[in-house]
Length: 330
View 1 (cartoon, rainbow, N blue to C red):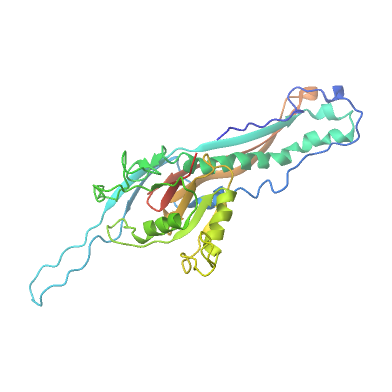
View 2: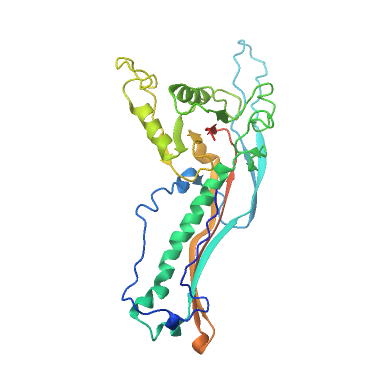
């Protein structure tokens, strides 16, 4: 992901507005329509439940009951199996700070055309620049999910099944001998076979207690082209891979997931698939968002006005088993 740094060609850093040519009567501001409509990052995290106190939290959690009741012969004195609990803990730490500021000298604006008042009003654009940077941070967890580690198993968000595998709390060897990854390689693009594989992952899902627990696809993150194609595959009444209009859509009758589109995926052809309950495992923790401060420094002709907006937040996950990365063609 390319880094973006913003500044202004006519900022307030020691500039003298009187030296700017006055042969114009207005300032034209260029804007781009729908600039904020592609920002989907806020929809990729569940609400944080750790509170806002402190910078370091150790989280201890458990599954519910491990095992099943047992059918026994009808005898008075007998021992039934005891329920078990699988437990684990992770450490949540670290924050990201983002901020941007604007400044100007009030006296520089006194003897100039009113058009230069835009310098004092530029602070209104700061939240746009902050929001844009935050969107990149939201997607960073998914763009770098094969290297960012976390959860009770301290593995990457996306594991390939060879270097590291999906794991259960308290039972890391449950999937021993199997691939047990949440990565699918799909150089062939969108197809009914891919959709069938994704539904199969959910249908064969094993929960943290080691019992079968089918889950449904709830949403898919992708670029616009793949999003349009997925919606066509999900909504078509016939099989669009065949020319015969009498052949029914093989995915008909299944719930249709939400499609989130973004152009900020590091590989535009990747798909990130979320399954039922993912909000309980992938979280955003905020100390504050878009906090605004304004102050003055200096005296007389050196007096300068500052405005800044900043956020402080972090992302973490408990588990990685309710999310699947479909690697697209590079």
